[in-house]
Image 1 (cartoon, rainbow, N blue to C red):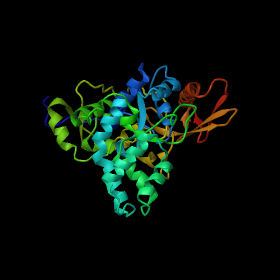
Image 2: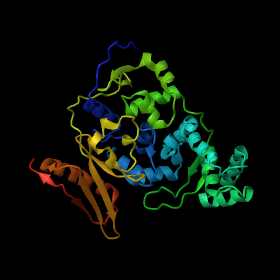
Image 3: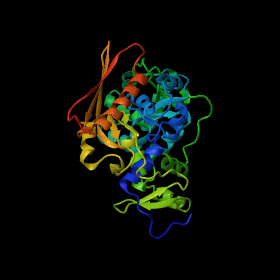
Image 4: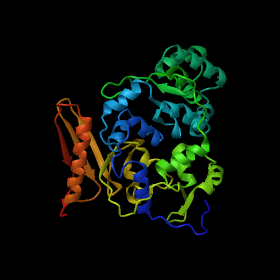
Length: 377
C-alpha cells in the first residue's frame, strides 16, 4: 500500500477511540474468553485477579469460571513474557511469544542478576539444565527451587539463582495458582511439561507486529517496543510499510495501522469501564496520552504497585477500590474531578455490573462514591 508524503494526523481522541475499539472497550464483545486472550495477545497478570476483571470489562456474558476452566484445562497459562512480567496467555502464545521476547527485557533482567555478582561461579547452561530437571520432576515453588539449587551452588545468592532460572527457562505457574476463588502458592514447571503436543516455534516478528496493531494500534515503533520489551523493531515496520497505513500523531510521531482496522469517529461514545491494576491498555504505548491525560499519569501508581482505574468518555478519570469482607463486598469509586449526575449514574451502573459478575452468589455488595463528588448534569 502506497502511503502519502504527508500522512493525515490523528487527534488524541481519534487514537483513543481506535485503541478502545481494538481493546474491546467501546462495546462488550461476544467472544469466548480464550479468543479474547488471543486477540489481546495476553492479559497482564502480576496479580491473580486482574485477568478476570480485564475480561469482565470487555466481554459480553463473561463469567470468571470460564477463564478459570481454561486454566485448569491448560488452554491458557500464566508465564513471564512481555516486559519480563507475568501474563495470562493461550497455550500457543505462552510458548511462541515467550520465545520471541526472550532477547529483550528477560535477557536484560538476567544480565542484571549476573552483574550484581550473586551468580559468580555459576555456569548458566548448567543452571538451566539443573532447574529444568527439578521442575519437570514435579512443580516446585521458588523457595523449593532455591533450596535445591543451593545444594549445587552453596556460595551463590539464593534469590539470584531462582530468578535466573525464571529468565533462562519458560516456566509456567501451574494451577491452582490463578484460579478464580481458589488460588495457591506459585509453583513452576516448564512449558514442555505443562502443555501437550509439539511446542510451537518463536512467534514470527512481522506477524506479531500485525497482531499488536490489531489490538493496540494505531501505534509507533516505540509503542510496540514499550509493549513487548524488545528493541530494534524499526526494520520490521519498514518491511511491513507497503501493507500498512501511516498516520501522524499531534506531536508528529509516525503511527502505523492495519488498513482494515476500525478507526471510529472521535465523537463515538465511550462507556464507563472499570479496569484492573496493570491493565495492558495503560502499559502498551510509549505515549499513553491516548488514554491517560498527562496530569493524571502519576496517579495510576502507588510505589511499584499499579492501581485499579476507571475510564469515563474513554480516558482515565479515577480509581476504584475493593473491600472483600467475608459477609459483604464494597466497591469504592474515587474520581479525579467532580462528576456530573449522568457520569455518576453511568459509573455506578458499570460498577454494579462488575460486582454482579465477580461477587459470589449470595454475598451482598455496595457501591460507594468518594469526593470530589457530584455536580449537576
